[in-house]
Image (cartoon, rainbow, N blue to C red; front, side, top):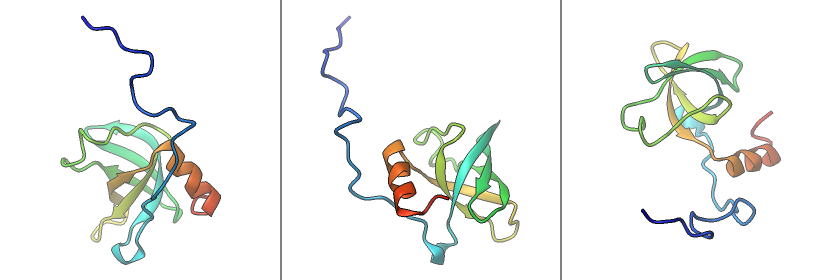
Length: 107
């Protein structure tokens, strides 16, 4: 079995900088949200920035690619027929969340 080298594993958090951050698009009815709790079966409880608590669904195309935990900041698209439900379409990294806070997107 191989041993890991000391410097292997990618960039350190102090040297990583944010170059481009995806923001919610109003024309697509996208909203920023914070994950409140995990409900199981690809479902999460979301506290959206528009003041609505929604049940979020992680679509199958993003299920294994996007690991979501409590407290993560995500972009969601509310359903047209049921405003209390939404699809999770994007997850922010820690550095991107710090950028959003500095620019005033998160309150």
